[in-house]
Length: 144
Image (cartoon, rainbow, N blue to C red; front, side):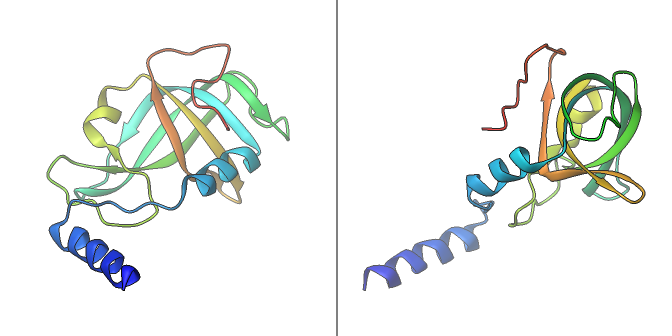
């Protein structure tokens, strides 16, 4: 009986469109802890998607390295990666992605990010990015 009420509440919330489900926090935390790279990047260029919802391509240079298991991302290294982003008019889908407002990325100068290496570059580890005001000697986006 109680379980039926919980499911009814979840269904109602989804139908009303006010819920953006995410995975449990421990999955994101685990991805941060397991990511081989944790860096702060000075954003030099941001290319938005052509649609209202998609992947913004962020390009910049590493300005602080907190974790680099391979030695591939020393200070000054140029890199690019995609950030899930949306325009103000977009309907953000329910799912695991952590969406960043395009407007915030357009004016951002720095971003802290957990990365994994791919054959053709780097990907964000389970959408773990955070826009930051300025670089710092200590992480502003903790792995814990």
